[in-house]
Length: 381
Image (tube, rainbow, N blue to C red; front, side):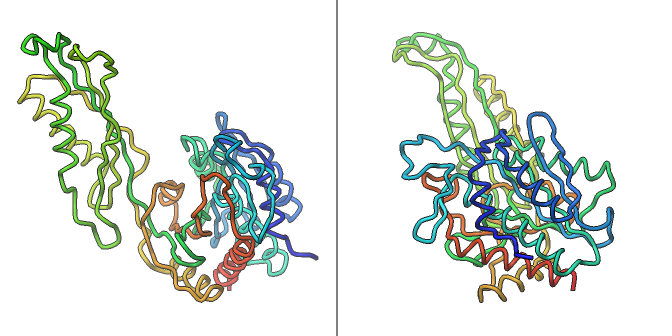
């Protein structure tokens, strides 16, 4: 039987306009491909989000290797800025173009193709799990989280998991992710008293107070980094009053702060620090400061060990590169999987993800399938 071509499957997936939260036909396509290959497939939809769970092998098998990925994509932006149809999957000069070609329909196609060919050629003693979501680029509340909730409720399990996100900055096999920094956002509102700018003594100006607070926060060194993580960062992303008049002192000032933090902190410890600084300044100035936080994920680490060694060996065999073990970058759905089993991330070069004319080298898709196939072979050897 002919092997499953990951490039053709990537092209078919790119042609599905699956901008979050639209399914766009992508999961329907994968459901058909996997069902025909003997996988037990279940749609695990929640809210407006479509998800697909596929298993080959016995339910609750003692050894079960999982792949996680997403078929949803970010919006294309201004179509006129593209040189190709964003959903045309055009191949030219050895590159496949289209929204999601890099992030991450090629990764999904590679692990689906690897899994389908592997179970046909070498049926493993165990199970292979594919957990594919349509809500990674959005709020991510009803995507991989819904799949993991459903798995727990139905006695399904993964012993280990690989997330197929793009991980390499410049060349294939350069980097794998063994963890991620945490991410949280703080929203600050300073409330004073509106007044005429010619009579500042009659008003309570919230702007200087906000500036002082933002300076205190942004100039504070959170840490110097830890064994596997770079130093935590805090960025002030906006300060705004909504005031268009130059002779009015505004009543309120708002600001937003984003923190990417390592395993020296938790979102709770950082929230407590933020509130202490805000309360201290409010007491000094007599101006009310309100602070709320939103947490996207805590930092986590899969300690280097059997899973990372398995992936590193396969990458080195297929690319002659030893991938750097990194925790850099933003958040991914690995932050959810890590509560259930060891998880690492490995995928293609991600230089064009979310960009106009997003594209992926065709040869990389074939190479990624080969790496995923070798991981399965070594895992079930």
